Length: 273
Image 1 (tube, rainbow, N blue to C red):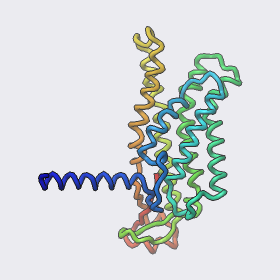
Image 2: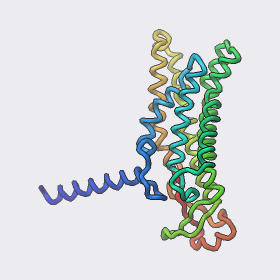
Image 3: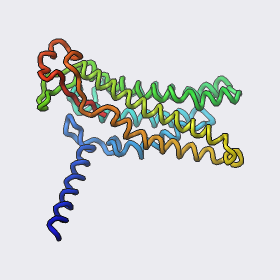
Image 4: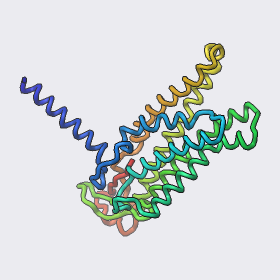
């Protein structure tokens, strides 16, 4: 083999191995992340759950079922990809297990609220049903996504996370950095699910007003599913990169006892995903 080709072949292998390690190994603990909770698995696992959760279900039970699956997966993803400074144990504590169960339960019932309103209040008005199925899920999806991150990663803001200097040396543990990391992740997740709920509804609304959809109303459902999957797929990299993985916190935003340690005027932290 040509030496140049062999060099680029081996270099490509190293590059691919490095990228694989970045998405497979937790940045704080060095432990392998479960396959289904790794970033590359987020789209193929969550896409069918998101699509099924946004369906106009005829009953409450299917809505609760799909909401439960979606929020259970999101809770596991948030737990697996958070900053591990506040949780030195490899297994979640009893408090964290209770938070996971409570968050999933609350998010399941709140996410199914539009269908519960339609069913139990016997909403028959087409405009009211359209509001419950197309408008209400948008703020609910965004708020529940942020709520899940805030609750499940609350220990990061309560106990603090490690902060580093510009040379990568661990300086201390900061609660302010922990709160900033959780807030940024919550905003990124709210952007992801809020946009995924909003844009397909707008596109379907415009499509349904066209002659093609009016002649073939059965096409609306497939268009909705395709749009949801496409928007989710496009928004995942946007959401994950909305804030840098290695965040910065300025000296004046740190605790008073840590401000003297920020020689360069700022410290760094691992935000988590």
